[in-house]
Length: 304
Image (cartoon, rainbow, N blue to C red; front, side):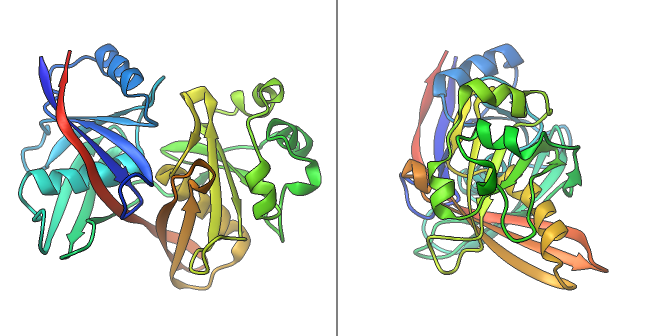
């Protein structure tokens, strides 16, 4: 059997940067074990399988796999798949202007993605988070977290930010670190990782600092998920959604819309930009949008 196969670089407007995503079209009939085997073969942080929607008014059904497990939701798979489908279905031009709404059926629920394409620019996609971040339990003591990341305890935290665990479909440990230098030297310290993170029910550890490379960015981030077969991820939309929980908890945002740009992937040579828009009402997060650019890199056929 042969399937249309594409790779898309997501959360970037330049090829060979951002987070690479594999998308398999026409995946109807493939079972989960075959999808998982294909995801191991592509060996990207996520591989998406697109099939016909259950509701004919929707665009597609989507399943997402890391090299080792299936996920109910993912930010960069949602952005990249929507941008690709808008193009291959002729809803936006390869060259020129266009806007489209792509409706994806995911295990987490139905997600509507707006795709915008302007002449000379990479497509930009944005969606409202299907779930808002919720507190997902207590993390181990900071000494244990620091050991797992190759850091010392006083390098964990900045200002009033402290480690917290949040879930929004996927759960992440959101770990604030002192500065960019600390973030750059962090790594998976294997002998101590399991004690800190493996029994927390999380996808991975999402490290962040307010010190950034670019002036327009709000946070610089890294994400480690060895248990999901992803030693480090260049850009993690679902973790960014969880980070909104820390922003709301610690930054005391006034009511209104707040735009936060996240840098990720710099340590991997895959710079990425994720845009979060938080809608705060009555001191609480009422809605959250996640957006980014996506560019197609490879198109061909997968034969199995």
